[in-house]
Image (tube, rainbow, N blue to C red):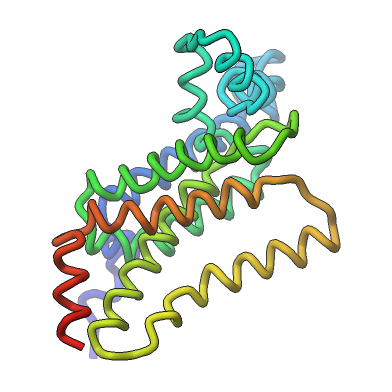
Length: 229
């Protein structure tokens, strides 16, 4: 029997806000790739990625200098919201887009578009602040991973609430973040790495906690489900 949905685009099942975020992340990376290959922008386009990282990546050292001088120019404050959209290479960007699409679908189907973007952006901002506070590295922070981990935090929140509502072990909701952190630890030990994991963990915690406020029903819904156990 012919299935009339067989030819439907798989993107139809994704909330528009998830598609929009993924398209922006992928689109910026495509521009960098096109510039590096000489397809657009001429000879200067080869340095577009490096210039973007210099201008839009988050720097803990610059933040420390701003605090010391109590001077917060827009050109540097904007780094809190621009760094998630700049990636180091194609693979870096591709994995971020995959996470946003995979986790974003589950979160975007429950959260409003505004709440979805709030989780991604607020988690990114909090992650940058924690990154600057905890680490003392000159390595800048860039890429969508802290915001994506914020979405993972929101996804974990949804699992946690649903498991608690049916009387199941709610700690199972944290299996995904536990696996990801273990993977990052093993990867770092084998291949070396920086302190990006600090921002990722901070993004996850921010996304989880923010979900108490921006999820449908908020904290009241959580209490209601827990009381019904």
